[in-house]
Image 1: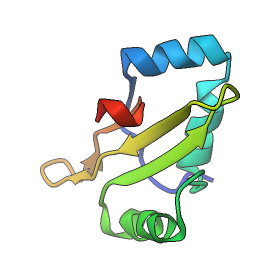
Image 2 (image 1 turned 45 degrees about the horizontal axis):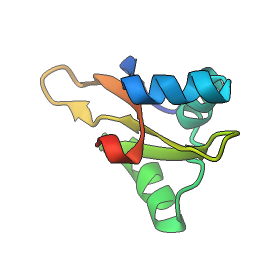
Image 3 (image 1 turned 135 degrees about the vertical axis):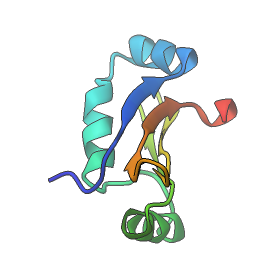
Length: 96
């Protein structure tokens, strides 16, 4: 069951290249993120994400693809004007 809104889902050009090369299904990682499986983050970041859902703050997950590339998913905090999360981004660490 989804735990929060994703907003508009986007992917950097480099992240798109990585997914095409690895042939991993990006939707699998999006589903994990959406259900609260934060992937390869430490305990403190895991707990921070759990708290961020409750407080409307930024949520970050990290996953390792089949070619050992680490991909990040970042869901932005709730926008105070709309009271919704506006976007989720797939990216590499070097891109943000």
